[in-house]
Image (cartoon, rainbow, N blue to C red; front, side):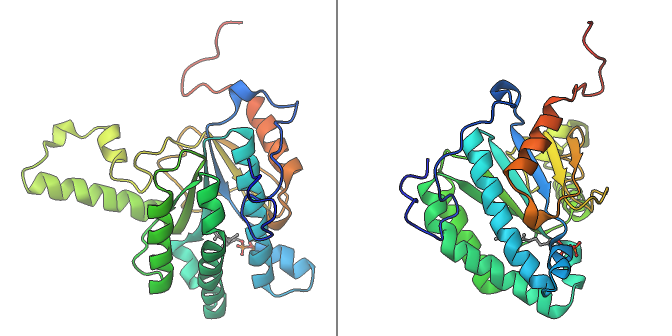
Length: 262
Ligand code: FPP
């Protein structure tokens, strides 16, 4: 991978393909990794920088993580970029984040296409600035047929709002007489979520030591393994991802069942 991008200093997946570290078993990698990218503000504060510089450094960490997941054969990466609650941040920080999303998308779209990444934005996109919505639509359309890593960016995403919207859609279909309530099962419900068509994450990584879900993928994380690291998101690097994956591979996943007989 990445041969064509080696000369493009801005490209998302720039650099030589990283081989899978010997500490990992290819057959037991998570198929889908989700990340709560926390600690950008603290990273900046510790350096005496404005908070927004932490977000800028966070983009670099996200690019590193996407490239490594792609190189190591992980099928999907879902990142929590902006929650429904993040509108409550100071206006300048929200504006900076919106402008940052636009800039990064503009700059990286060509590289994403070339690397066969399929990008989707999950969340209520209607309140986002018009220019960003257009870029999102373009990036989604131009990469939808790609067969590389699926990269989901949760933007104006809230897990509870997603569940309520899915329930409301089902209720409306029942009210119109199109749907028998008895036929509503987990699969039918999941079809109404932003993640429809995507498998559930196997591993959730949260950086900066906080031990919360923060309204992220409340339905989809039901059986995910959790890895919480003290590393602040802008410092999240190959060693930190490797540690998360080694931790994941040490777990015995039971999905509510029992351990296999010894
Ligand atoms: C949380 O750290 C981080 C965010 C709310 C923003 C994350 C966004 C990015 C890394 C940019 C991603 C870009 C694209 C194009 C997808 P925080 O600000 O809550 O940190 P703190 O808890 O230390 O204050």
